[in-house]
Picture (spheres, rainbow, N blue to C red):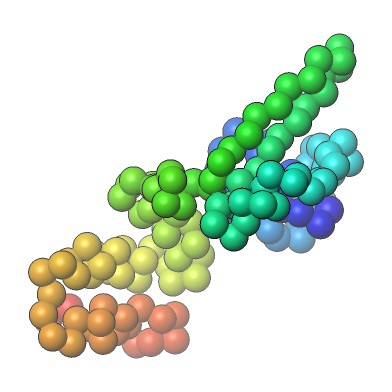
Length: 139
């Protein structure tokens, strides 16, 4: 299973770090789906790269119907930017397992305050946010 996208969409939600654990790749449903997927190059996508991360999905149904859907760029790119809510949800999916809920929230609050922050704000932004850092005081 060389490509994560070959099996990450079969649970009706967006992917997370949990989709890349060894046990996730052993899920029989994911393995069954991946066995029916073939990843091939697409000339149009190749021509658009690196300016766009486009993709094409071609499906042949059990009754032989062919369906194609082309995506001109990935979510979060210039053509389809994430909303602030989507960006924060994506951040939390990656940060929570590493930083823990408290540090993740602290960093989110500090990041939202950046437009109003003054000199030295980048250093204060990260103080106490790494897992190995002591808990900071929020003075």
